[in-house]
Image (cartoon, rainbow, N blue to C red; front, side, top):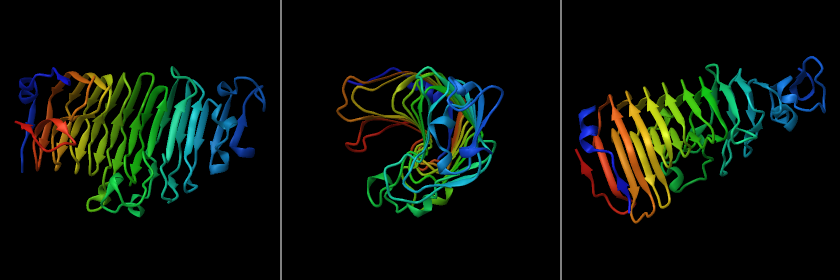
Length: 317
């Protein structure tokens, strides 16, 4: 049985809403040389083409990404980063179009306790979503690579980048160490008529802070599938389904989540908790809402659904 311990009175009291370069881009410094041990602390790599995405480059402490187009049907994989690595996006990256599973971009450290910093420097990762959008999202139609960005291992910081036109889900965060995602703009506004399942943030990790981001999409701004000690604050969400806990399926738990000072506009919902009908051994506890504002909501400002994927039986306030 699912257990919901967040008091509705607290939710209602705190929500306002209305219904209206060397070979392969590797540069060694000092005594570092090809084949040297622990080169992650002693070299800078430049990635300016798919050919530069090599295991040697990924061991460097600094990785600079220049403008290029990623091969269609291939993941720009920056997994296995050295602990403490910094990745700088210095040019826009466009992902070639192909109907495949994805993800388009994958980043993480070699160790589950490792950390990295991804600094987008205001540049853009372009998923060319318009080439995939057909009004069916991930529920049918053409195969859409997703997520567009996957944070798969480790922790640290992911910041200051624009995610443009994701084919479906934009960012999936499965961090295994403390992580902060900040100053990210996800812009799927061009998909207003045909985009679907364009969740901005899908999370399954713990010790996670998502703050100061902008989400323009057609689905959840935040969807917490599992995890604990999550802070979602000072984000702007528009065009989608609002800020969600869930959907929660069997065996999943969500605990200690604070959702504060966010703005939701022109969306179906403001704040929502959704749990899958028939789910067992699952729980949602200690959810705190504070200082959130919602306007232009077409369905409910606050909604709790305990039979998601069965039928629409809503508890709304």
